[in-house]
Length: 284
Image (cartoon, rainbow, N blue to C red; front, side, top):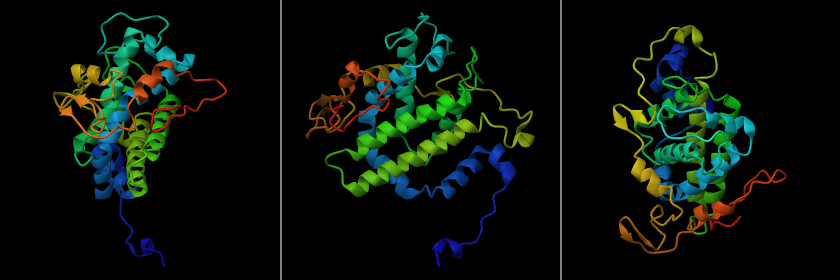
């Protein structure tokens, strides 16, 4: 008899799922069996994930700028950006460089501590901001593009981790599974702002004062200088195993992800080959 049949059925208060972020996250953790082992896997794998951030950012924005329906979002001024804007954005447009900085900060946040509620509060706020709430210049991104974007991020990270030449297969699996759970919880924290489920509980709900984009609990999530330095083409500072001198001095070994960001410079997404092939060595 499966062990699950011996477990007592848990009671979940439906109203709490729509009125309490903590209750919602706790339920998702339980349903997905997200626990200590996943947190440990994310912590141990964070240095490998962070090394991939520049490449992931470039891949995502190449994809978004490949279609007019997603590129048009970047012609609307964001709350935090006051610089010049190109009417037809490309990868070097000021507003794109600005948005890349936020995506780098987001991906770096995924490498922080998911045992803290602040981690999930940040992911929830990311979902809220894409519906235009809390923005001086409202911007509503339709959910179909949100889901597709998350899928691209998961696809690139999964392939890169599984292609790592030195990680043991069990560790690769643990990191990929933990990342997948976090991304799917992030997906839920997007959809909760889009769907009408539970609106009988949330209609007229006061969300209080909404902090501007990039801030949480009075603290600035995005450090522009860190984001700019992390966005450079040299991934040595992001990868502890690069064997090159980074912010903390020289380190031993050779990082399998070294060069992956610079390789993205000449990346072309072909119509007949929508999947971007990236290996752990940065080859396409």
